[in-house]
Image 1 (cartoon, rainbow, N blue to C red):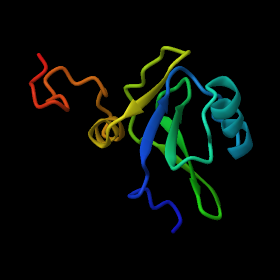
Image 2 (image 1 turned 90 degrees about the vertical axis):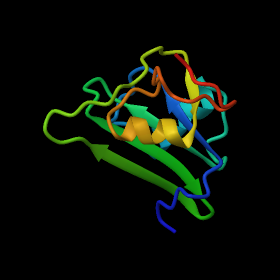
Image 3 (image 1 turned 60 degrees about the vertical axis):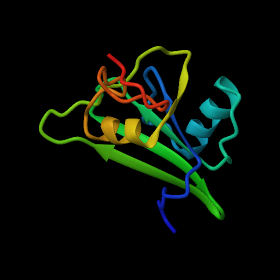
Image 4 (image 1 turned 120 degrees about the vertical axis):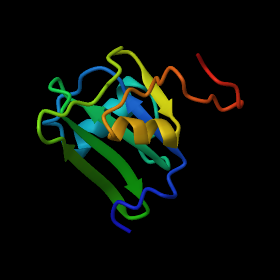
Length: 118
């Protein structure tokens, strides 16, 4: 189904700035050539531009690619990690935080091993 991300195995955030004028093929090339990852894997790849108010998400389904685009209203900005050479694996909770405009590095979040992080 178009854009159904519930079965996605991994969520990756492509840190740094991405030229959001890129289409599916351009974003696939970044994933494949720059980060040596498989754009056809069961993963969601997230990209953000310089303004930090819009993101693109690329996901491969059985019959083709889905490109999602979201722009925040009213001056909202994504808290996007900017280290250019990094692709980061996100948990579903970190993905929700990001989509809500929060940082993926919450200082008081409970870590996966059950310990509080202070």
